[in-house]
Amino acid sequence: MTGDKMPQWHEMDAVTLARKLSQRELSAETLLASCLERIDEREPQVQAWSHIARDAALERARELDRGPVRGLLHGLPIGVKDLFDTADMPTTYGSPIYAGHRPAADAAPVALCREQGGVMVGKTVTTEFATFNPGKTRNPHRLTHTPGGSSSGSAAAVADYMVPLAFASQTAASVIRPAAYCGIIGYKPSYGLVNRSGVKPLSDSLDTIGFLARSVDDVALFAAAASGDRALLQMDV
View 1: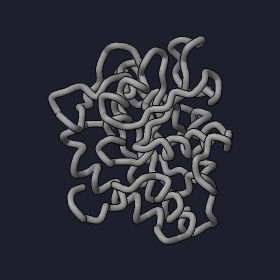
View 2: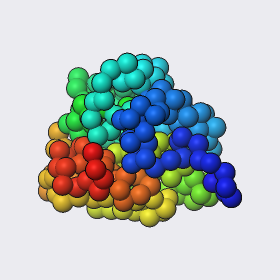
View 3: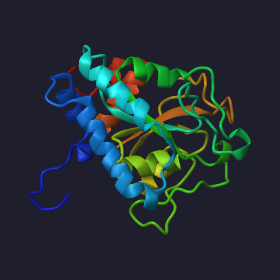
């Protein structure tokens, strides 16, 4: 964004978008269409996604527009790290071993965010099993540089305005490192704050669900919805 140019919907912060969506000043379908247009424009260069659920996301957005406001994340597009199970999308854990794998149920934090009105746009690239074998994703600020791992696709997608929010996870530094590399906000909450059921484990005593966004208020909104802890909120809802 430069000069006095008005931001497009996909460039706006999640808190502002949440207010507009809940007050019906913006439709979920319009916001999603803006995000998908950005993905179409930039994905060939950035390669943040392992799967894009375009049709399912649009159907979900239209359903939300027809019904009542569902929760804190009503109509907000979200990227889901491919370490998190999703019943309606492939989950490969970043490995060819699991190509085409379709879990029976969503991971707990994904399910909670769906209940709160979130629109799952697709699966973002992770390093294989959240370890050291890198994925295809590039840093959107300089395509020859790494976006950091293991939440590489999530960080790149948020940093490049493809989605306002994306799930991450951390065993050692897999939330804070890609957030720093891509210039966004990464929140690694206290161990155990967010239910890890349905998220591929690496170390049971260290694994933590994390959140990526472009502002502190945005990541607080996301974490509150995924954890059920409304004390995290930095906004009146």
